[in-house]
Image (cartoon, rainbow, N blue to C red):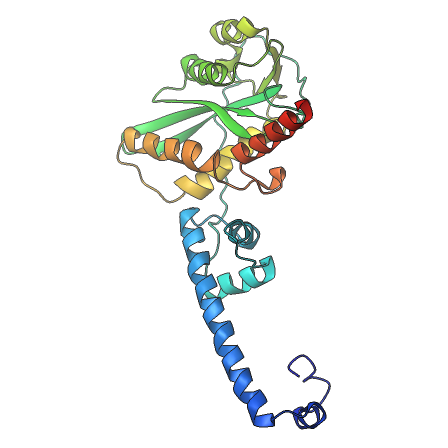
Length: 288
């Protein structure tokens, strides 16, 4: 009767179905109260997910998180409930580049050429450096990202932007992942990546080095995108009194949230680690 109420009069349907008109309205009130209770519970779960994800998730990601917890709530309903709760993802903001390409060191060819697809793990890595302001001064962050899963496989932080910063991030990535010889590594033309020390370090596993064209941030879009996500979702509007407090915040975001939990649209809304686990489980099944 409720579904057909737009086409037929309630009185006529009650007579035809031999039910009480008053009984239908009593049921309708109970149904509305049940719906209200369900939506109230959903709102509490949505608010919890929104806060746990640093107020960064929109309706699609919140809806996916609800489904993962066994709650069937589509993105349209999720969006409406978020609107009623006045929940809006953190606003986007532009950030400046840290690239120091004004040097006379040799640069590598752009072999990657914006081909950000990798068929399997540890065949293509990208790296970049950014900066974070603290009351003690600048803190610099270097990362290495696996293009297969968009996972941050190596990182380092220091108060100075130097070749050591890039080398330490590379060493962490190699120690963790143990890639085969011949991996492709792409970065911008920063002096840190052009230095002899860095080239010697990546040469230990016969790395194929690739570099962006001068002044073209799109050639390293995946690394740029990660820094944008980090700053929008975690660092935006925060004021760090010390470099140490900034380091702790960034460590927590990369290792505990981004790699393990954050849904990535490129990965069909899986986290980087979740995507790699799916890949490995399929590989093991094929071997079996």
